Length: 111
Image (cartoon, rainbow, N blue to C red; front, side):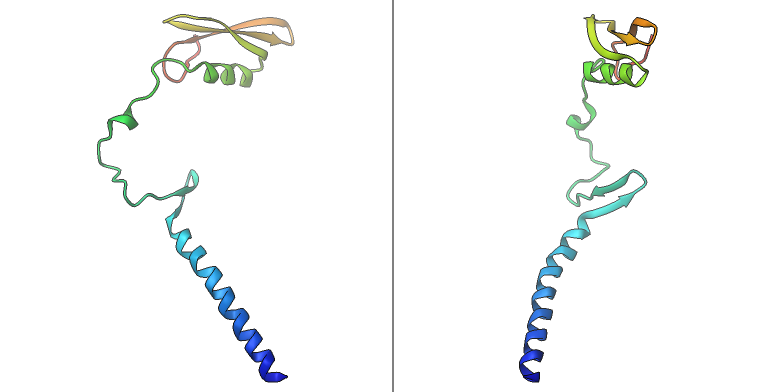
């Protein structure tokens, strides 16, 4: 009885060891940075110029403009006009209808 219990315990230890080892190996690609937990890509050289990384959308993203307007207290915010120079968002505040105008540049600065 005692010997069969030892075999069972050794078998469980072996199975546990086999299931933990791939998890430890996969965790080596994770890095902890001030921004949080991220995935480290060993194949990517951070000093290498990659033209696709440097290109972004030109102008103000409409979703960003809506998010900024909502964070400023605009409820039921919607874009009412988008021109090459500005993005106008309209919504409701406690005082009534309100408009916010953003420059059509990256980051959507408020005008």
